[in-house]
Length: 315
Image (cartoon, rainbow, N blue to C red; front, side):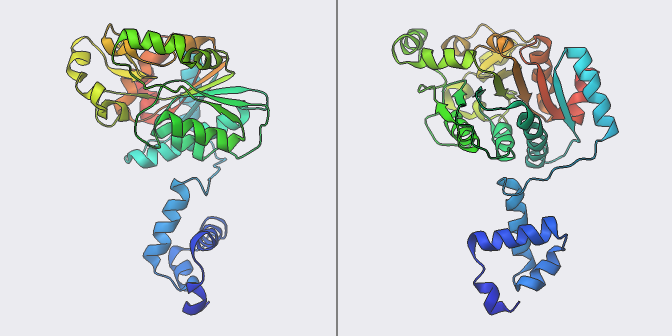
């Protein structure tokens, strides 16, 4: 192919051609560069973007014996219905993609038409949704499990639930409220008068819940918003180690007695126990303590994580 011809390959057509050559035909990036008459660096960049944005999904069918062994041990120790463990990676973004692909494989089997699927927020959940198989579930619905942020973000509950509903071709119900209210009174008013309570009730009756969790470092998106960041010293002082659905937990998995927990607009972690399939999708060794706390309380019955976290959970 000449340089002139390759110049017409723009946008999605170029992305699609590189996807086929690289991921299906098995050509090297240099071979694709020569064939299309474009710089190898550009091929490398597009190939990376194709994985990151979910345009290309790699379905690995080779079980890793050590990970399978960890999965069975985790099921036995914590009474879990479904577990997936992937190899650990040093880079957070790579780890999220690997966990996302494993989570999507479980969710593709769990999700069916006629169900209600409730979802939290977070980068790992966003990565998982990008790997899901697109379909049309006309009789299904997606429900947010918590309030959102005032700014757009791929980790915001509004964006995550919208993306999931779009992928599944389902209706979407939002919790149209901030994740934290200014005071307990304003929270009670919102729950009583804004219709938020009706959405939360729908979430409690969902068939599948998809959640993530975070620690108290800046690596967790929730800790970077002002209302949380300013209170981190207080939370740590009373024993908080991390959060799930915006509720801060101690090492035993119990919600701590703090204003943020009293003003959060979200499903309480304990309510997840009533949902038939509740999947915690989270990895990175820095999250091991909060993942362990969540499992210890039996808030969820499914887990997708990485090898290092799994080993820590079993230690």
